[in-house]
Image (cartoon, rainbow, N blue to C red):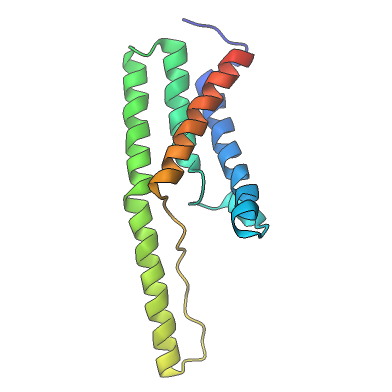
Length: 150
């Protein structure tokens, strides 16, 4: 078994990848939309996918430690694939449904002239495939960089 100065290399690598992906969302939003929104660092959805980054980093780190032909790497890879599929599939569609429900609710409030504000559902839940891919690349890169450093 390969030893590292980091006690639990897969865990540390996954957490660093997840945190970095969340932090990156803020300057990327500034670059793309011209607005600084620090709350993006604490929200779901957006570029890159932090769930994908964490899962990919975990799988890559397990592969580095235990071998890419190990059963542990196979398990981590399947969990990673499920996580990324869920982020780009089910959670993304849930966000699209929330957006549609918000529009319907707002339109009904305007039609009925209801003064109470409509409850707004969170729309940014999942990811576009490119955001998931970016998380995958980020997570794998972080694992290999940390492995090289430590």
